[in-house]
Amino acid sequence: MRLVAAQFKHETNTFSPVPTPLERFEAKFGNTARAAYKGTNTPLGAYIALAEHAGADLDVPVAAEAWPSGPVETAAFETVVDAILQAVKQGCDAVLLDLHGAMVTRNHDDGEGELLRRIRGVLPGVPIAVALDFHANLTAQMVENCTAIVGYRTYPHVDMREAGERAGRIVMDAVAGRSKPVMRWGQRPMIPHVMRQATDDEPMKSLVAAARGLESVTLPAVTVFAGFPHADIKDAGLSAVAVADGDEEAAGQAVQKLLDRAWQAREAFVYKSEPLLAALDRAQKLAEGAGTGPVVLLDHCDNCGSGGTQDSMAVIEAVMKHGGLGDVAVFAVCDPKAVAELIAAGVGRRASVALGGKFDMPAIGHKAKPLKVEGVVRAVTDGEFTIRGPMYTGVRVSMGRTAVLDTGPVEIVVTEKNHEPWDLGCLRSVGIEPTAKRFVLLKSRVHWRAGFKPIARAVVDCAGIGVTTSDYSILEFKKLHRPIYPLDPDAAA
Image 1 (spheres, rainbow, N blue to C red):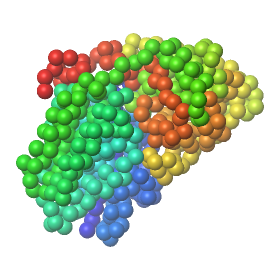
Image 2 (tube, rainbow, N blue to C red; image 1 turned 180 degrees about the vertical axis):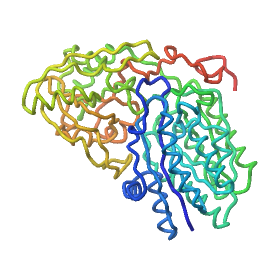
Image 3 (cartoon, helix red, strand yellow; image 1 turned 90 degrees about the vertical axis):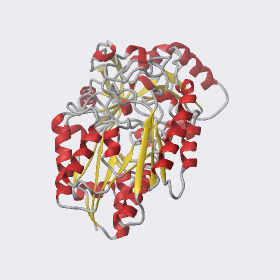
Image 4 (cartoon, rainbow, N blue to C red; image 1 turned 45 degrees about the horizontal axis):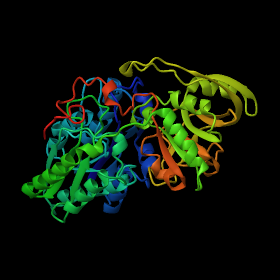
């Protein structure tokens, strides 16, 4: 048996000013890709394990994943897709793909659907397994051009490997003649706010549980996708898909049950922000109360894990001016220029930098605004560490060269590359112990919970400035199918 397994993942925020060239993917090819993901908590890691267990000849032509940002450049898309197609053209019994489901390119609003269409064009009958992110914007083109789609059940995404195992097993059973997978899917006109999508909380907790409850031996995979609302494309929004063994009617019924339940709970998926200064006052009171561990402050409007620039200084500036929020660790400001200046100053030396604010954000009418910050350079590292927490476990990550600037009340981690803080290693690797801090300010929305929730005394959402805003009223949607809830309160199912 010959298998082709590949990874190509990008969550595209069409409002983001951050470019997405090939270099952002840091693509790995061939044996390097296989070695990097073997044994990891990822769908590709699962595919490698399944192939090895089956004694299959496995080709891993490419593994490419980039931090969310603006539309993928054409050259980047074509380079990765070509690597996958070249492997498929050599012939195979199945293709196993680790994709995201919300990729938008300069030429294609549905990047994954276009990739799958091209694979089908090379080998029309080849079985294709697809593992998708919880935030996938599912499309007809995706469903029509593969054999089985299975999505993550968790946000934070701690079950990525499990999704790959389920998708891979369904397709390998089909190759062996043990099953005949069929799929049905559907949508509802709603775009749940990302801050209301956590699967540990309602209403998503019950919705995901309902999907799991619909599964059976003959209905092996039922997935609800929350969707990614910061992609201005026709098909953005909540959807569901079911994979059945030959029973199309059962798959369709499962999808409709899930979508009806989601629509009934639509009001609970709406998020409303608290004014920033009120949030900081509340954080101070929480830190003065009983309990151990830091109060986590979430700068959720500037989350690089959803396409934010990770250099908006609005919340950091407000914290520094507040006066009652000392002993704060900040992760992180992505500013390569500032990193270079801090390295040049040297560890133990004082430095003054114009920090962050390097990107204009035309989509929200915001001009770049750096913040002058002065302090002592406490650490300089290569920014590399291996994730030990439950999300992306075992993956080696690089934040680029990284420095820590200590202003006194606030220690700020400054990186050359984007990285969302879902693992304690992002602070510990630069010499900051998060459990010893009074406050930890994280540029994150929900993924922070994977590593930091167990140590947090409390969490306070801090609405700053950025292209991952939950205030949809400041975003101009031009392609999104309308009417849709909550942009259009009277939208009908």
